[in-house]
Length: 341
Image (cartoon, rainbow, N blue to C red):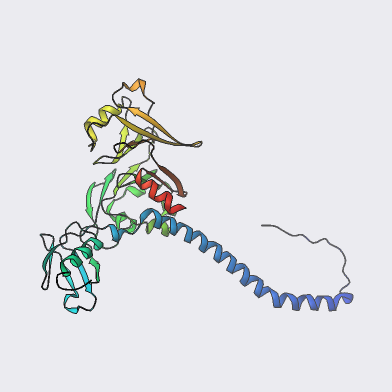
């Protein structure tokens, strides 16, 4: 704050009555305008910050409803333009199917809402020319996340309703009361969100954190911070991407053989993705060579298992908030980079 000091000079009030009167009237007229203008500018600046965060969150999260795979127990509302006999809410049966008038059963299991819409259109073309079909999921009963790490009851949890951090926090027990909490979210095969919840009392008051949207099958690791615990991430062309821990005798080849389910079994070279103050580096690690002939793996490294013929890997790193950073590798990084432009 700038403090303005007036010099203690004598002023002849009598000779300045008119001047003071004009100044007072001038200030009365303009102060409300100035105050309103200042408040509006501050509000606009604050809104700009919020909107920027929301745009980035949206870019990273996408539309969870579009990606959702329909399953048994879900309820879907179907609307067929100018064909009211089909307009109704249908419950997906245990076999994953729904039954519609005339066209019979449609397999909904594993389809997105757009996929189910296309399947219904295809079945209706036998009876209706160019049908217009809209599918809305009204009840989600197949949303789940994995909560792992230092929580009381690790495992798979079904989430009813909104998929966000607010829904998860009651499930992780008393861990938030402990110092140095971190939460790593592994999404798909190439996106990692890193939450530092050390100052959890202030983070929990941030609506961006509470409203942070999760996606189906996200893996959340809640760990108690410890400088002696070294960790790395393995993502890419694997069936079980996740967070892994390093001990004194850590050997990547042994870890890959014992704990990582690689989709392409003859993979010989993986990528070490390392972020530092100087930028992002990519190092080749040959699993067929002895460890001492390969680059040394450091805590925090991302080990990326590439697709066949994938040589140069796209990477994305960004700090979204003081307590949140995101890293993406491969196809997912390419999508985020495109959205950022």
